[in-house]
Length: 516
Image 1 (tube, rainbow, N blue to C red):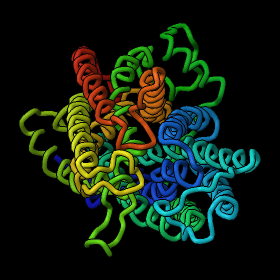
Image 2: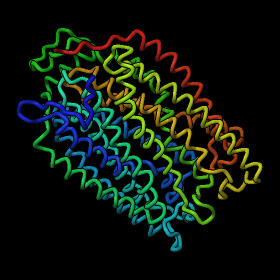
Image 3: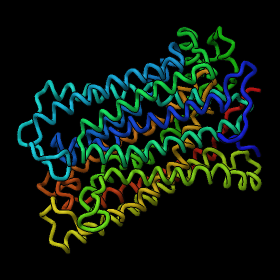
Image 4: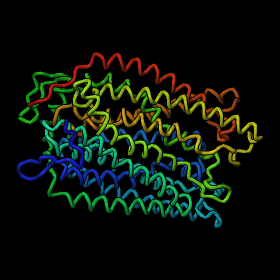
């Protein structure tokens, strides 16, 4: 089987557009975007609970709310792209919004540093506690405006750029298109790794303002690279608004009497696709809630542990830097999966992808459940070590337990994403009508948005339930008296239940017939 990876030959259209020649630009754009965006997103909880002085519960809830918005807004960007803008212009708009929002965040951080930080702070989150004074409402409003403009930029970029890359391969190049999703994620994993290591190190050791400014500069390069590939892109024209509305009515609500005057919209014979996809969407939410712990509680866990490399005088690793383990899992596993596992398994199953998309998603869900069990066991050990060391009431002292204990849960969650995250994106892209490809990817991303909201609501409910009688919150600011391990066990239990429900729906699912 020809897997169609980036090093293999692909056949563009007769006009010379499309194929891997064009898709490579999109892959590079995705790599750059991940550095710029995740330089903010990956370390946001540290900024909120450090310079902004929020509690752990409030910071986690704030990150979950923003992360949910980040992953729901792609529905807005996708609808705008598929109905009016087109994916090409949507990506350009995303670039402009990225420059605006990151510029505002840089200015906001500069103002925050002047007002809140003592002169001897030196830009380190671990030695800098914000003074009792807080930012003015105007400054906070400016910060949150910038933060949610960043979310809006992601809303246009995420579904439209990735869908535009997949558009470079026609429906007959199924193997190349499937391989594209694998290699796209291989590329952005390098972006995640650089953001999680280099950018977070700069933010916590040089200064948040410098870190945000570096993210802004990366986005300038993002726009330049995208424009360089302009002449190679195969650009799908958007559907006009009236036809798009009738298409949505027909396919979402199974209206067979709707008249669609655009021939391209008639290339599929599947009605009511949203109703058909809804069970898969709903039965993936707990998996998404597990994934959301990467940017919240996993990071807070790491902040309490011994983060030194090379002894007492060694480099202090930012807790968010462990996210690079997820990236390296992608980097190691995607080529193996695409070049070795898929060809081998396809010979056994006769399926061009080795296993079906839903089987791939299910494998990732099982791995996520195992991750939560491992995270609970590691957290229970951290609490025992803190108690044995007499640190229960000394939250500012590092627990004598290496940060490396968290590596297994990061690697496992990375493996879960290799299966389910990529699988969900390919599934929703493939199972919607051809004219709604961006919407399909946005539906996939919205799972993770709603998962973040669900995680935030669960944190809030448990925090309320555990403190209303005067008890200690599971998410206490003093993590040595908190119980993140109990929360992880709850997620593991819910995840196991979700796997059973997902398998029931997956077994009955009938894949869409592709047009010739």
